[in-house]
Amino acid sequence: MEIHVNTFGTSLRMHDGLLSIKWQDQINQVPMVKIKSITVTKGIQLSTDVIYQCLENGIDVLLVERSGRQVGRLWNNRFGSISTIRKNQLDFAKSQQVVSWVIENMREKFANQKELIACFLELDEGDHTHLKQIIARIAAYSVRLDDYLTMPFDEASARIRAVEGQVSKMYFECINRYLPYRYQFTKRSKRPALDITNSMLNYCYGMLYSHLESALIKSGLDPFIGFFHRDEYNRPILTYDVIEPFRPWADWVVIHLCMNEILDESFFEVSDGGYWLRGDGKRLLIQHFVDYFEEIIDYQELHFTRFMQLEKRAQSLVQLIQNEETNDAR
Image (cartoon, rainbow, N blue to C red; front, side, top):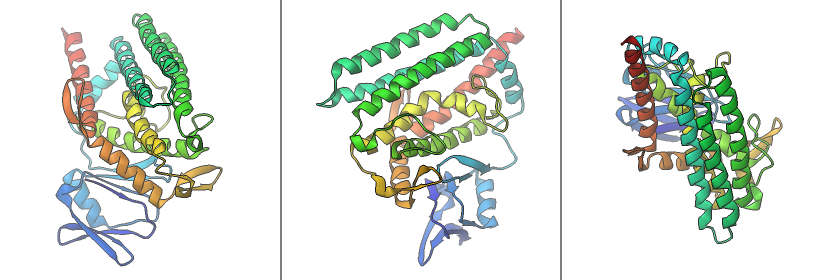
Protein backbone atom coordinates (compact mmCIF):
# COMPACT_ATOMS: atom_id res chain seq x y z
CA MET A 1 0.00 0.00 0.00
CA GLU A 2 1.16 3.50 -0.84
CA ILE A 3 0.25 6.39 1.45
CA HIS A 4 0.18 9.84 -0.17
CA VAL A 5 -0.53 12.80 2.12
CA ASN A 6 -0.71 16.29 0.63
CA THR A 7 -3.48 18.05 2.59
CA PHE A 8 -2.05 20.89 4.66
CA GLY A 9 -2.35 20.31 8.41
CA THR A 10 -2.62 16.51 8.27
CA SER A 11 -0.73 14.69 11.05
CA LEU A 12 0.78 11.20 11.04
CA ARG A 13 1.37 9.47 14.35
CA MET A 14 1.62 5.96 15.79
CA HIS A 15 -1.33 4.72 17.83
CA ASP A 16 -1.52 1.18 19.21
CA GLY A 17 0.93 -0.04 16.57
CA LEU A 18 -1.05 1.53 13.72
CA LEU A 19 -0.29 4.52 11.55
CA SER A 20 -2.87 7.14 12.47
CA ILE A 21 -3.58 9.75 9.80
CA LYS A 22 -5.58 12.70 11.13
CA TRP A 23 -7.01 15.70 9.33
CA GLN A 24 -9.42 17.88 11.29
CA ASP A 25 -11.91 15.37 12.79
CA GLN A 26 -11.17 12.58 10.32
CA ILE A 27 -8.88 9.74 11.42
CA ASN A 28 -7.72 6.77 9.35
CA GLN A 29 -5.60 3.99 10.80
CA VAL A 30 -3.44 1.63 8.75
CA PRO A 31 -1.29 -1.35 9.89
CA MET A 32 2.38 -0.61 9.21
CA VAL A 33 2.90 -4.09 7.71
CA LYS A 34 0.65 -3.12 4.80
CA ILE A 35 2.56 0.05 3.93
CA LYS A 36 5.29 0.16 1.28
CA SER A 37 5.90 3.90 1.18
CA ILE A 38 4.68 7.19 2.63
CA THR A 39 4.82 10.33 0.50
CA VAL A 40 4.31 13.74 2.10
CA THR A 41 4.38 17.37 0.99
CA LYS A 42 4.91 20.60 2.93
CA GLY A 43 2.64 21.35 5.88
CA ILE A 44 2.38 17.72 7.09
CA GLN A 45 3.13 16.81 10.71
CA LEU A 46 5.17 13.59 10.94
CA SER A 47 6.08 12.20 14.36
CA THR A 48 9.49 10.67 15.06
CA ASP A 49 7.71 7.47 16.17
CA VAL A 50 6.41 7.07 12.61
CA ILE A 51 9.90 7.72 11.23
CA TYR A 52 11.44 5.10 13.52
CA GLN A 53 8.84 2.52 12.50
CA CYS A 54 9.44 3.27 8.82
CA LEU A 55 13.21 2.94 9.17
CA GLU A 56 12.84 -0.31 11.09
CA ASN A 57 10.45 -1.85 8.58
CA GLY A 58 12.11 -0.63 5.37
CA ILE A 59 9.24 1.72 4.49
CA ASP A 60 10.24 4.62 2.26
CA VAL A 61 9.37 8.11 3.48
CA LEU A 62 9.42 10.46 0.49
CA LEU A 63 9.25 14.25 0.59
CA VAL A 64 7.96 15.81 -2.61
CA GLU A 65 7.23 19.30 -3.86
CA ARG A 66 3.90 20.25 -5.39
CA SER A 67 5.00 19.22 -8.89
CA GLY A 68 5.51 15.67 -7.63
CA ARG A 69 9.31 15.95 -7.84
CA GLN A 70 11.08 14.24 -4.98
CA VAL A 71 13.24 16.56 -2.87
CA GLY A 72 14.33 14.04 -0.27
CA ARG A 73 13.81 10.65 1.28
CA LEU A 74 14.37 8.95 4.60
CA TRP A 75 15.81 5.47 4.73
CA ASN A 76 17.91 3.52 7.18
CA ASN A 77 21.71 3.53 7.09
CA ARG A 78 21.94 0.29 5.11
CA PHE A 79 22.09 -0.21 1.34
CA GLY A 80 20.45 -3.33 -0.01
CA SER A 81 23.71 -5.26 -0.24
CA ILE A 82 27.47 -5.19 0.22
CA SER A 83 29.65 -2.34 -1.06
CA THR A 84 31.16 -4.61 -3.74
CA ILE A 85 28.15 -3.91 -5.93
CA ARG A 86 28.77 -0.17 -5.87
CA LYS A 87 32.48 -0.65 -6.54
CA ASN A 88 31.61 -2.81 -9.55
CA GLN A 89 29.06 -0.21 -10.59
CA LEU A 90 31.89 2.33 -10.95
CA ASP A 91 33.92 -0.10 -13.05
CA PHE A 92 30.91 -0.90 -15.25
CA ALA A 93 30.31 2.81 -15.86
CA LYS A 94 33.78 3.03 -17.45
CA SER A 95 33.54 -0.15 -19.52
CA GLN A 96 32.63 -0.55 -23.18
CA GLN A 97 29.81 -2.85 -22.08
CA VAL A 98 27.88 0.20 -20.90
CA VAL A 99 27.33 1.27 -24.53
CA SER A 100 25.35 -1.87 -25.36
CA TRP A 101 23.37 -1.51 -22.10
CA VAL A 102 22.42 2.08 -22.95
CA ILE A 103 21.43 1.09 -26.49
CA GLU A 104 19.27 -1.80 -25.33
CA ASN A 105 17.66 0.48 -22.75
CA MET A 106 16.86 3.07 -25.41
CA ARG A 107 15.64 0.46 -27.88
CA GLU A 108 13.25 -0.82 -25.20
CA LYS A 109 11.98 2.72 -24.64
CA PHE A 110 11.32 3.15 -28.36
CA ALA A 111 9.44 -0.17 -28.43
CA ASN A 112 7.20 0.94 -25.56
CA GLN A 113 6.60 4.28 -27.26
CA LYS A 114 5.57 2.48 -30.45
CA GLU A 115 3.20 0.28 -28.45
CA LEU A 116 1.57 3.30 -26.87
CA ILE A 117 1.14 5.10 -30.19
CA ALA A 118 -0.38 1.94 -31.66
CA CYS A 119 -3.21 2.29 -29.12
CA PHE A 120 -4.44 5.31 -31.09
CA LEU A 121 -5.09 2.99 -34.04
CA GLU A 122 -8.20 1.86 -32.15
CA LEU A 123 -9.71 5.35 -32.35
CA ASP A 124 -12.40 5.79 -34.99
CA GLU A 125 -11.11 9.25 -35.85
CA GLY A 126 -7.45 8.20 -35.83
CA ASP A 127 -5.37 8.77 -38.95
CA HIS A 128 -4.07 5.24 -39.38
CA THR A 129 -1.68 6.15 -42.17
CA HIS A 130 -0.04 8.85 -40.06
CA LEU A 131 0.19 6.61 -36.99
CA LYS A 132 1.79 3.78 -38.94
CA GLN A 133 4.29 6.21 -40.43
CA ILE A 134 5.31 7.42 -36.95
CA ILE A 135 5.66 3.84 -35.71
CA ALA A 136 7.81 2.97 -38.74
CA ARG A 137 10.03 6.02 -38.23
CA ILE A 138 10.62 5.16 -34.57
CA ALA A 139 11.48 1.60 -35.63
CA ALA A 140 14.01 2.97 -38.11
CA TYR A 141 15.65 5.09 -35.39
CA SER A 142 15.83 1.98 -33.21
CA VAL A 143 17.72 0.12 -35.92
CA ARG A 144 20.10 3.07 -36.32
CA LEU A 145 21.28 2.56 -32.73
CA ASP A 146 23.22 -0.52 -33.88
CA ASP A 147 25.67 1.80 -35.67
CA TYR A 148 26.91 3.11 -32.32
CA LEU A 149 27.71 -0.22 -30.62
CA THR A 150 31.44 -0.17 -31.34
CA MET A 151 31.98 3.56 -30.85
CA PRO A 152 33.79 4.98 -27.81
CA PHE A 153 31.26 5.79 -25.13
CA ASP A 154 31.54 9.59 -25.32
CA GLU A 155 30.87 9.58 -29.05
CA ALA A 156 28.16 6.94 -28.85
CA SER A 157 26.30 8.66 -26.00
CA ALA A 158 26.18 11.98 -27.89
CA ARG A 159 24.69 10.28 -30.95
CA ILE A 160 22.22 8.29 -28.85
CA ARG A 161 21.05 11.46 -27.11
CA ALA A 162 20.49 13.07 -30.50
CA VAL A 163 18.39 10.13 -31.67
CA GLU A 164 16.46 10.09 -28.41
CA GLY A 165 15.66 13.79 -28.79
CA GLN A 166 14.37 13.31 -32.33
CA VAL A 167 12.18 10.37 -31.34
CA SER A 168 10.86 12.17 -28.25
CA LYS A 169 9.83 15.21 -30.29
CA MET A 170 8.05 13.05 -32.86
CA TYR A 171 6.43 10.90 -30.15
CA PHE A 172 4.91 13.80 -28.19
CA GLU A 173 3.80 15.61 -31.33
CA CYS A 174 1.94 12.45 -32.33
CA ILE A 175 0.31 12.03 -28.91
CA ASN A 176 -0.68 15.68 -28.81
CA ARG A 177 -2.42 15.40 -32.18
CA TYR A 178 -4.92 12.84 -30.87
CA LEU A 179 -5.66 14.31 -27.45
CA PRO A 180 -8.94 16.20 -26.87
CA TYR A 181 -8.43 19.87 -27.67
CA ARG A 182 -8.35 21.12 -24.06
CA TYR A 183 -5.42 18.77 -23.30
CA GLN A 184 -3.26 19.58 -26.30
CA PHE A 185 0.04 21.30 -25.58
CA THR A 186 2.68 23.20 -27.54
CA LYS A 187 5.73 21.39 -26.15
CA ARG A 188 6.99 19.43 -23.16
CA SER A 189 7.48 21.77 -20.21
CA LYS A 190 8.85 20.79 -16.82
CA ARG A 191 9.34 23.34 -14.06
CA PRO A 192 6.89 24.87 -14.21
CA ALA A 193 4.42 23.05 -16.44
CA LEU A 194 2.87 25.46 -18.93
CA ASP A 195 -0.39 23.49 -19.30
CA ILE A 196 -2.46 20.90 -17.46
CA THR A 197 -1.21 17.90 -19.47
CA ASN A 198 2.44 18.64 -18.75
CA SER A 199 1.53 19.19 -15.11
CA MET A 200 0.12 15.65 -14.99
CA LEU A 201 3.09 14.21 -16.87
CA ASN A 202 5.55 15.85 -14.47
CA TYR A 203 3.69 14.53 -11.43
CA CYS A 204 3.60 10.98 -12.81
CA TYR A 205 7.29 11.09 -13.69
CA GLY A 206 8.02 12.27 -10.15
CA MET A 207 6.23 9.24 -8.69
CA LEU A 208 8.00 6.93 -11.14
CA TYR A 209 11.41 8.40 -10.20
CA SER A 210 10.72 7.79 -6.52
CA HIS A 211 9.72 4.16 -7.02
CA LEU A 212 12.68 3.38 -9.23
CA GLU A 213 15.18 5.09 -6.97
CA SER A 214 13.88 2.99 -4.07
CA ALA A 215 14.34 -0.16 -6.16
CA LEU A 216 17.93 0.80 -7.00
CA ILE A 217 18.85 1.51 -3.38
CA LYS A 218 17.28 -1.72 -2.13
CA SER A 219 19.19 -3.71 -4.73
CA GLY A 220 22.48 -2.24 -3.52
CA LEU A 221 23.10 0.26 -6.34
CA ASP A 222 24.02 3.92 -5.91
CA PRO A 223 21.47 6.11 -7.76
CA PHE A 224 24.09 8.86 -8.16
CA ILE A 225 26.53 6.76 -10.21
CA GLY A 226 25.01 6.81 -13.67
CA PHE A 227 26.01 5.69 -17.14
CA PHE A 228 24.24 7.68 -19.84
CA HIS A 229 22.85 10.99 -18.65
CA ARG A 230 25.38 13.73 -18.01
CA ASP A 231 26.64 14.02 -14.45
CA GLU A 232 24.93 16.77 -12.51
CA TYR A 233 25.62 17.90 -8.98
CA ASN A 234 23.39 16.09 -6.47
CA ARG A 235 21.29 14.39 -9.17
CA PRO A 236 20.46 10.63 -9.15
CA ILE A 237 21.75 10.03 -12.67
CA LEU A 238 21.33 6.25 -12.59
CA THR A 239 17.63 6.73 -11.83
CA TYR A 240 17.36 8.88 -14.97
CA ASP A 241 19.14 6.15 -16.96
CA VAL A 242 17.07 3.19 -15.82
CA ILE A 243 13.73 5.01 -15.97
CA GLU A 244 13.80 5.59 -19.74
CA PRO A 245 11.97 2.42 -20.92
CA PHE A 246 9.23 2.94 -18.34
CA ARG A 247 8.33 6.54 -19.11
CA PRO A 248 5.65 5.44 -21.62
CA TRP A 249 3.87 3.65 -18.75
CA ALA A 250 3.55 6.98 -16.92
CA ASP A 251 2.56 8.62 -20.21
CA TRP A 252 -0.27 6.13 -20.59
CA VAL A 253 -1.74 7.04 -17.19
CA VAL A 254 -1.95 10.69 -18.27
CA ILE A 255 -3.24 9.89 -21.75
CA HIS A 256 -6.00 7.73 -20.29
CA LEU A 257 -7.07 10.57 -18.00
CA CYS A 258 -7.03 13.02 -20.92
CA MET A 259 -8.91 10.81 -23.36
CA ASN A 260 -11.63 10.27 -20.78
CA GLU A 261 -11.51 13.95 -19.74
CA ILE A 262 -11.39 13.03 -16.06
CA LEU A 263 -9.32 16.02 -14.92
CA ASP A 264 -10.21 19.46 -16.26
CA GLU A 265 -8.87 22.93 -15.47
CA SER A 266 -10.80 23.07 -12.17
CA PHE A 267 -8.38 20.51 -10.70
CA PHE A 268 -5.41 22.83 -11.26
CA GLU A 269 -4.24 26.19 -10.01
CA VAL A 270 -2.18 28.70 -11.94
CA SER A 271 0.62 30.34 -9.96
CA ASP A 272 4.34 31.07 -10.21
CA GLY A 273 4.09 30.98 -13.99
CA GLY A 274 2.77 27.43 -14.26
CA TYR A 275 0.00 24.88 -13.70
CA TRP A 276 -0.12 22.86 -10.49
CA LEU A 277 -2.43 20.03 -9.45
CA ARG A 278 -4.82 20.80 -6.59
CA GLY A 279 -5.55 18.30 -3.80
CA ASP A 280 -8.46 16.50 -5.49
CA GLY A 281 -6.55 16.39 -8.76
CA LYS A 282 -3.54 14.83 -7.06
CA ARG A 283 -5.72 12.19 -5.42
CA LEU A 284 -7.30 11.18 -8.73
CA LEU A 285 -3.98 11.11 -10.56
CA ILE A 286 -2.23 9.16 -7.80
CA GLN A 287 -5.05 6.61 -7.65
CA HIS A 288 -4.95 6.03 -11.41
CA PHE A 289 -1.15 5.77 -11.31
CA VAL A 290 -1.15 3.25 -8.47
CA ASP A 291 -3.97 1.18 -10.02
CA TYR A 292 -2.12 1.00 -13.33
CA PHE A 293 1.24 0.10 -11.78
CA GLU A 294 -0.33 -2.55 -9.55
CA GLU A 295 -1.66 -4.43 -12.57
CA ILE A 296 0.07 -7.77 -13.14
CA ILE A 297 1.50 -7.93 -16.66
CA ASP A 298 3.76 -10.12 -18.77
CA TYR A 299 6.80 -8.04 -19.63
CA GLN A 300 10.04 -9.44 -21.00
CA GLU A 301 9.15 -12.94 -19.78
CA LEU A 302 8.35 -11.73 -16.26
CA HIS A 303 4.84 -12.00 -14.77
CA PHE A 304 4.61 -9.31 -12.09
CA THR A 305 2.99 -5.97 -11.32
CA ARG A 306 4.52 -2.96 -13.02
CA PHE A 307 5.87 -1.86 -9.64
CA MET A 308 7.60 -5.23 -9.27
CA GLN A 309 8.91 -4.99 -12.84
CA LEU A 310 10.83 -1.89 -11.72
CA GLU A 311 12.39 -3.83 -8.84
CA LYS A 312 13.27 -6.72 -11.13
CA ARG A 313 14.95 -4.31 -13.53
CA ALA A 314 17.17 -2.99 -10.72
CA GLN A 315 18.05 -6.56 -9.73
CA SER A 316 18.88 -7.52 -13.32
CA LEU A 317 21.21 -4.53 -13.57
CA VAL A 318 23.03 -5.76 -10.47
CA GLN A 319 23.42 -9.19 -12.08
CA LEU A 320 24.75 -7.62 -15.28
CA ILE A 321 27.28 -5.54 -13.36
CA GLN A 322 28.40 -8.51 -11.30
CA ASN A 323 28.68 -10.76 -14.35
CA GLU A 324 30.73 -8.15 -16.18
CA GLU A 325 33.09 -7.96 -13.22
CA THR A 326 33.41 -11.76 -13.19
CA ASN A 327 34.18 -11.85 -16.92
CA ASP A 328 36.82 -9.14 -16.56
CA ALA A 329 38.51 -11.13 -13.79
CA ARG A 330 38.90 -14.20 -16.00
